[in-house]
Every structure is written in C-alpha cells, then in structure tokens.
Amino acid sequence: MVTTTDTTEIITQPKTEMVTRPCLKRWLKHFFYLPATKRFFNTQDQHAIAEAVTAAEQGHVGEIQVVIEGCLPSRMAYYVDTHARARQLFAELGVWDTELNSGVLLYLNLCERKVEIVIDRGIKTATTQQVWDDVCAHIVQGLAQQQYRQAVMTGVQEIGEILDAFYDCQWVDRENELSNAPIILG
Image (cartoon, rainbow, N blue to C red; front, side, top):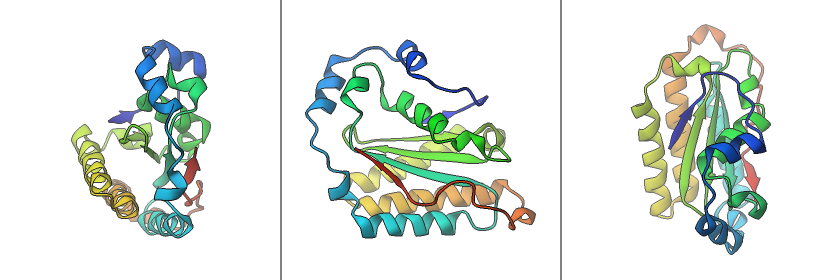
C-alpha cells in the first residue's frame, strides 16, 4: 500500500517490468475499464482537492502531489501494478526532486480501488509504515462509501498533519515546488 524510497531511483519501464509479475487478469480489467475519473472527480472536486493540498502544505516544507488515475494504460497494465505505477509517477513527476527531499505522492487507482503513498527519503526517517498505512486505510474507507472527494481531502489533510509534525515551522517562507492541483490521468 505504501512505498518509501531510500534513494531517488528513477523508475523506468524496464525496471518496473522486472519488479512486477505479468498478469493477464489485471490487463483485462484495465483494458475494459470505462474511464470514470471525470465522473468521480469533476472540476469542483479537483478545485476542492487543490485547496486541501494548499491548506495541508501550510507551515512546513513538505510537498504533496495527488495523482488520480482511472486505469493503467493498456500497454502497461500487463506488466505494471499500482505499486510500480505509483513509484514510476513519483519519479516522472519529479516529486523526489524537492529541495529538502520532502515530497509525498498520493496515488489513487480507481479501476483497482487502490491507494498508494510514496514518500521521499527526507521523510522516511521520521515516520513509520503504520502511519502511512492508516492514511491509506482511511482513504480506502471513504472511497468504499462513495465519498470520493471527501476521502481524498481527508487523506491530504492527514498527510499535512504528518508533515507538520515532522518539519520545523521555521521553514514557512518557501516556494511551492509542486503543483497543488491534482493530476487526473485516464
């Protein structure tokens, strides 16, 4: 459910194929999945999530990036699971490239109904796996109740609280290194 990175290893397509076992069932599930990200997260929902990210990033240098993906691209679904996809997006979107290694990727895959959190090495030392598992569990619980927007906003708020406890408040005057708007994929 949650991935922590020891280094800023770039996850490329060949590396994800080595890590994940091919799965025809996963490929079929994603191939026949009807795109639903716009149905579950309309423009108002996306704006509310962006506002939640902005609020959650206040008072610390932590950066939160939300990525919501309907389904994996069919060319990848046979080899890549949600765990590998989250790590790949963590690298591709530059979440690892924050000044103080303070990036957190919150990844939702609607087709598989899975949540992944990838944290950078700057945060890993001060948190435990259980903290991140709890955040994922709360988001999954909200999604199961069809409270999509609220589930994501609650997860972002919890991540903000974790980052606030970890980072010193003296760093409040800083640039926003990552966009606060959620990235919606397929």
